Image (cartoon, rainbow, N blue to C red):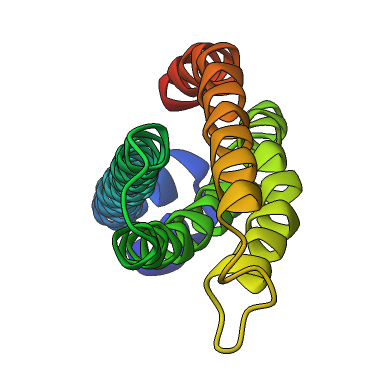
Length: 199
């Protein structure tokens, strides 16, 4: 038997012969495993970074929605306060009309911001927003009736001084009730908003 055939049949000889090959394969496999692990860690870290960035972006968007809603809300309250003061001091109809126009423009912004906050806020925040805007929805037809009677073109009450005095005073009181109703709803929104932004 030749030396070559002997090495083919001798287990010890085969082990010695193939040891370098095994070492190379082990090294290759190890390198693949290391590369795979590195890629996994890198991708995982990137995913976490993306998720964190997305989470931060969403949180920032939600904070902006709160900020814009509150700004619109306080702007509306300011306009209502001006209208209430004008009614209480019996300003001329033209001045009252200007105040109402300012309130209505601000109210459009307010309701738009309420809708946006309702889309990004929690269910509890949506409920708080609904509680805030509900009194305005109830107030709107009353204000429209007042405008129609006294301030519209060819208003039937344009020359009714006694009616104007009575109804403008009543409208001022109605606005005072609306403003007071906002206090409790605002407190609830702040509480729910803190919890929502902490998520």
